[in-house]
Length: 156
Image 1 (tube, rainbow, N blue to C red):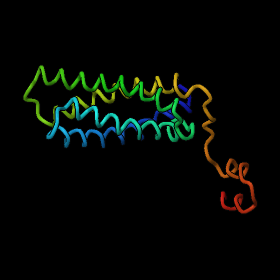
Image 2 (image 1 turned 30 degrees about the horizontal axis):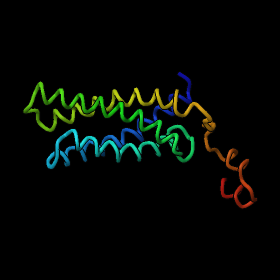
Image 3 (image 1 turned 45 degrees about the vertical axis):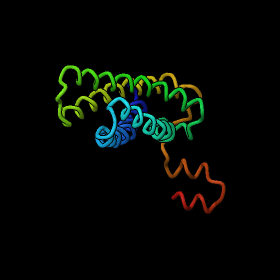
Image 4 (image 1 turned 180 degrees about the horizontal axis):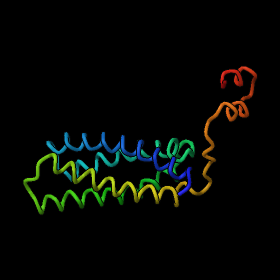
């Protein structure tokens, strides 16, 4: 795996992991008032929109996510939803009295596995087409793209 792929995976983990941890907490709070499948669907919809935008802008440095990116990224999130919901429903069938810690462990493990699959799909299928260069932002890079002398000074 090349250096850029490792860097984009690290950004994917930070962005997706942050959204995932917030989602995990929201899921825990919401399961007190609705079924876990419904709560997971709500959390998945909200977190998917946020994660799609973060991955487009930060992970893959593709810019703002357009409709195609949101739709294709959402398709990978649907697969992740099926994995996490399946894991939680399986836990409920096998161990109906599972506590919150066990539920969270299963949810986060399933999310991590689904996340790895999403990264591969996003990198290979969604963002491989027309991807912008992931050139690091350096003073020289910023100065090259500056339009005025003041922007060159500000970049330094």
